[in-house]
Image (cartoon, rainbow, N blue to C red; front, top):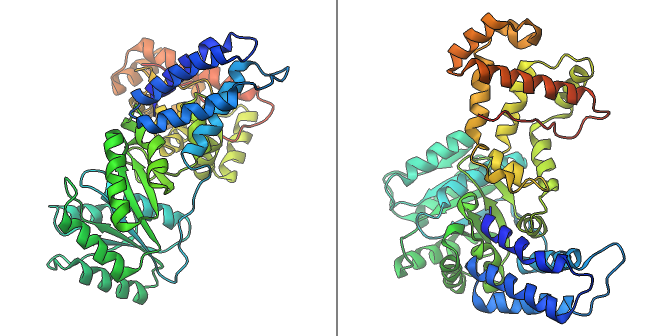
Length: 439
């Protein structure tokens, strides 16, 4: 996420980090590089200029505390200003009616329908009772897609395959929700490849008919400044309540995230990465600012871990580690939980100092799958008793998973090292950390 921007900003700080005092000269040089980094990230020139002028104004003349050098102070100022630029604080969804309506709008191809499925799962996990509404009657397979997403999220979807009147469909969905004790309607609306009057009139009519508590505009973060311009057009017409940034896992620039709040004066409410329905996060401006500046996001990492690792699981694991009984089945279970948290690259980018390691081509989710293949090629007895390993067993395991004996030996050695390291820990961390084998 924002790899290029993060790297360029960190390079911009290199000069001032070597200084003993903040001066107008060294601040100006740093600001010039920061502005260039923002422009390269497709941030609007006016926004980049105004932002860097605020940073410069706050930096010049600052007194340096003995324990803080000019570089640290500049990073702190940047963190504060980036946080403010992106909205300062997280914004909750407004769901204050017996049946609240979330109207999801945007252009075709930006991930609206997928977001609807992710939001349904998110609200379900928040103990809500969502109903997905298939109101995109124009795009081929849109109704089938939202039905499949509803099945994955284990929520209900309302659709009328032969009805093209979206206002009628939405009103019927509301009646259905009342009868079946649903308290949130998530309405997937039609998009177009470009803004047109027919589309705008239709969503305006849906807004009038449903009186939604939330209108969320979905932006493809990879589009950059063009997406922000589209958001402004939608907002002028619909006065939407919030923004959703999708495909952040494929975006190396970040212009949309840094510009949209300033441009439309509406908060970013969610960010979405990857295709998994669990890959949806509430947007925290301060946390994203930390990640952009290479500081990681340990709070979000712990929150993700807590959703997957229950207290009972943690205590059970802690007991096995302390008794030196941690085995391959335990390891396999931990790998499965980690995979549910998101991509391994995203997890690593949240750990301070490991952002650049996430760019290593050897670090990917396929490495986890290969590790699982090795363990699953073992017999149940071998998985529960690692001491059984001998040359003939290793040969059979290697054949079963398509690996060499050397790779099997390397994995077993790393497993033993990790097992010993975990045993020597005085306290269990909130999320176990593992040295993943490289393949």
